[in-house]
Image 1 (spheres, one colour):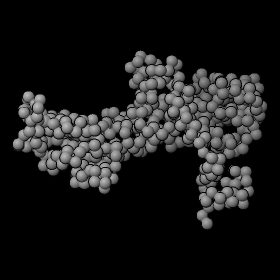
Image 2 (image 1 turned 30 degrees about the vertical axis):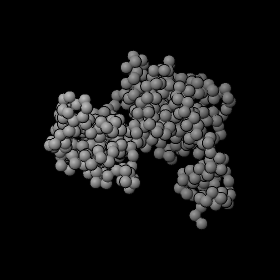
Image 3 (image 1 turned 180 degrees about the vertical axis):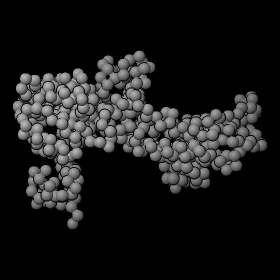
Length: 450
């Protein structure tokens, strides 16, 4: 695979010297490394000695056709993509090319913009495919269990390292399903307290009348049914770490008791008169805006400041870029192993839908979707129609089927302008309109600064 700081290698195959020259010039001007071949035998020779990312081949050529070349590439060069170009543009030819394995089919004549757009689309798909493939034999775990290489998760990993080296209280924020408990465990197991207990408590899952006795324990006779004394979570975690998930769900009275533990490192068991000293580090998590709850008077300000010594925000899955591809392979491998099934492969279109989906449930939702696909899909190849119906509908909405024509036009004009670095003359040429019409459209859409 070509390294990330190097442009991709493209092989152009065509029996017309003029076509070879034009394509080579256009692609080279974009920074690609371009090889040319006048026929299939010469192309195969180059493929066997050079790492080629994309082959652009003509359909009709003497002796051996472009379809034969595509077939040969698919059977022998699995990390190379193919794009077909031809002056004989027929539906039958396009179907044959796609079935044989071409990723794009471009009929002649085509503009420079059409060529470069098609090349970009194919290479982007190739990039995504390689990320999934390389996950099988590339270590992507920066710590014990956290998967990801995106900038967003790299910042979290850096914060984990810094937080683990201290005994300060940490507040973990993030949407449901982003992995806050996983981050808390990483902080604990990379800290000097790693050999001591890590106790995770869901504050929202314990009834209000039981949470105090669960956290701090109780003495014999403290209430009806307390026939013996029992230690609470804080005593159990002495020397280690307590993780208080959904801290926002605690009542005002419980918040006062937690504040005492943070301030004085002591607590009182239910029914007892004397306090107990405890050496426990507290990590807390919330999927709500605690500062907003403080403003509303729902959460104690002094407790908020005690908890918020170190603040780590876990990014949602939709902001983690290609990390989603790493997760897909990880979960697919995991569940395939558990169910004694082959690891499924995902079509490019299915991957695109999974990448563009909003993932309100984040990593937890993705894990559930992949488990369902592994269990319920008979074939070991996942296509769009295998995905949940809500996800397929979301994919349609994301490309604009729930928007007006004016909204789609406005977005397209903005994108073209951006790609032309704001040059209205060039943008008008790409759009196929004159500069005056473009200015009128921009004024109408209130995009032009007056």
